[in-house]
Image 1 (cartoon, rainbow, N blue to C red):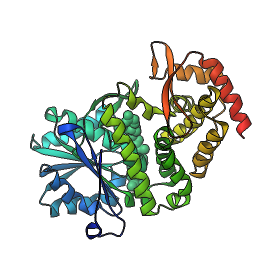
Image 2: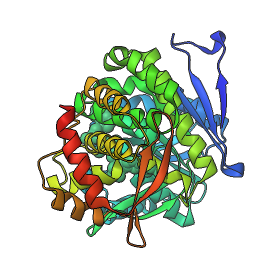
Image 3: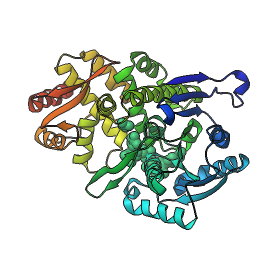
Amino acid sequence: MVEEQLTAVQRPFGVSMKKLTVGLGDRSYPIWIGADILARLGEALREVSFPKRIAVVSNPTVFERYGETVLDSLGNAGMNASVITIPDGESHKDLQTLETVYDALIAGGFDRGSALVALGGGVVGDLAGFAAATFLRGIPFAQVPTTLLSQVDSSVGGKTGVNHRLGKNLIGAFYQPMHVHIDVATLRSLPAREFAAGMAEVVKYGVIRDREFFDQLATSRDRLLQQEPEALVEAVKRSCQIKADVVESDEKESSLRAILNFGHTFGHAVETLSGYGEFRHGEAVAIGMVAAALASRSLGLCSREDVLEIRDLLTALQLPTTPPPFSLEAYLKAMGRDKKVKGGMLRMVLNRGIGDCAITEIPDPETLFRNVLSEWNSLL
Ligand code: NAD
Ligand code: GLY
């Protein structure tokens, strides 16, 4: 992963723009991160020789705010863009909506020389990415993520897909974009709860890979909450760097990439037991990260102070950090269904202190989570 700092001359908008490269051989691609850089999308796509015939996939919520800027930018770069809108919401990340995207592409005469641009959060990005991976056996696409979660997680790394009625993300492909264009100014219109949910993933990167970054987040938490552009660009950049590093080592999640699931084992159980929709995914992950930290402490991998630091940073970032009151048995059952159970053995990502982690087999989940739930009470 390569980082390039732009010189002052190239900073027309005050906050310096950062460029990263996700290094995957001939499938490498740039990530641009800045504030108010949406209007530079066309320029960025020209730099990667993106096709000129484009369908922008978006939803009405996002398109009404940012669609015009994107279409103008593409037009100014000599590109010919039309729009495919899909309904807003996770419940529409499905095969039926995907089919409407194929319908529009076929009806519009899109061919192998054309490309998709995903403008929106993780739902739009995952679905449009999968449409690009499969339409005519694959056409190029670019990600223009507009939620914090999609800027620091889903737009980078090439996981695309849709949900099946029997489970989330069961249909999909690893398919990398040609460009990721991150404008943190789009986060200004994001509901506060969505913003906080994205911050959970940002904190996750600090806990699993980078103590210094974790400390920076703690120091700059008020600037982040106020969405100060410089602070946001830095936080998003470091998050993308860490994600890119992991993806470069293990693109298809045969080993290391699983560390990105830190907080997800217990977090998925929280989501399952509460019913999808009660917690945002990032909120459930925040609770799951405290559970993982308590589990680490119980196994001697981190200290009580580490657990408190993680809990306190998440709380400061307006995230929930206490488990909803389900029984130990209910949590164990919900985690038993988690996809990270391999050969009957529960495997969890556990932090070692703050800034490092390991994928650990849990031979006796019942004892561990009994400790976790009882220790949780003593944290209050
Ligand atoms: P989302 O896409 O549903 O967006 C949340 C809400 O915010 C939506 O209503 C959306 O219309 C709205 N929105 C988006 N940008 C906005 C803006 N700038 N201003 C105002 N409103 C805006 O949710 P999400 O959290 O971005 O993504 C969740 C999805 O991401 C899930 O489907 C999850 O499975 C997927 N995901 C994928 C990966 C991956 O690696 N591919 C990783 C994590 C999550
Ligand atoms: N969000 C986890 C991953 O991309 O692997």
